[in-house]
Length: 161
Length: 333
Ligand code: FES
Ligand code: FES
Image 1: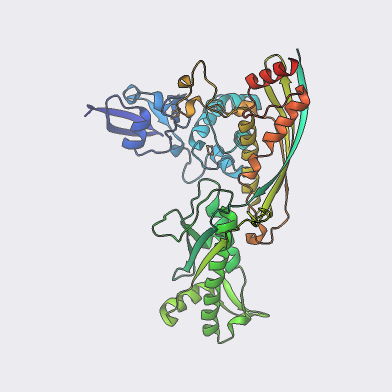
Image 2: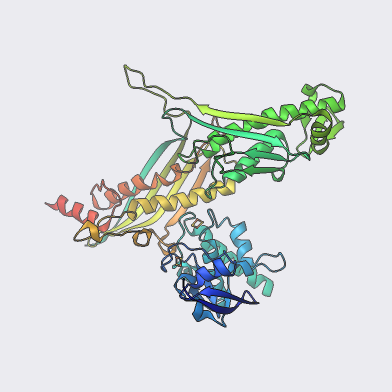
């Protein structure tokens, strides 16, 4: 059995600590130890984007990130986005725009979109496409997802104004 | 050497469900003691929205709100038999089975209410807002909640129903070979516009305009979602998806989906979707199965557009740059 190592992270704003297997990925640690199954394991080798999370403000693939290297880091996943039962504008836009079918790509898409909107609050369509280019969706044809991200940006700027 | 524009059209006539040895699905419906309805199925929702649409169908048949219906699916041990969710059959076959089960359950419910109201069950109807009323005299009524309680605790009756929908096996006529493989067809037509680079063989889809005839859109937003995704997948089949070719040998080929090509968010053509509704005589509330049909017409439309652009027929999918170039070369020789 692999050696267990302590891992302390701030997960969606909350201080958390668990023992994880040395050498395991952040994806495994989040899903199996921290009980956060919102990041999905699609390919486990960095090609599908289903496991996308935000680590210290940077977009990362949890399947390619060693859990141990995240000690002390702040990790954001889609499970932390709704606040007090109120959906994040991106979640709302995805829901209202029917931007998910099977939903497997959705958490990764939302994280990729969030990282974009955190950086560029009013992105162009091309910027949205660029930001989602690392995330594969088999169901939607992308169009509803792109539209949902643009809609969330509009809703955000509306609220800010 | 130039970029050449071409336009192609194709139409499809697509069967809903299949017909090998007959095509059945079953449903069981029962009410809880407080008048909510459970639908037991063994049919799977794989993201196409089966649960939502089945809840709508049950709610419509019984006359309650959709959120009073719970769909319990995907347990083939405890659910009644279903052939499965494939062949675009889910809405049509399972929906029809639910209508039958819900109709039977509703009849029991009305009989229980009739007993409580001391009227004839034939004079009762649901008002869609949780009550059973006497036709023409809505002030005489009982809630479905109270009816269910009375059934359970007073009359000792089970408000439940069984339903099966079977498209029977069709045998070919020995003389002509003619048979009726399906009872219900969805239709689509696509016009595709492409740019073909006759130097690299690359095909770029400029636009696809799709018209889909789907019987009746029971949930219009979900139908639209399916059609948009399907149109994209049709393009993907036409131009990208294959595990071939790999050089110099097949063993160098892809071993999993990481090496399987599909268009990404940056490769989307201008896409137009138009929905036509011509209710199917044997469809649940007129619905047909649009699931697979919607990803089909783009393929021949794109092949025809390539022909229109550079004058070659590529008859093997996907239409890769290599195949286009080989066809152009063969044409010159
Ligand atoms: S699971 Fe990480 S990129 Fe696919
Ligand atoms: S919604 Fe199914 S993969 Fe995107």
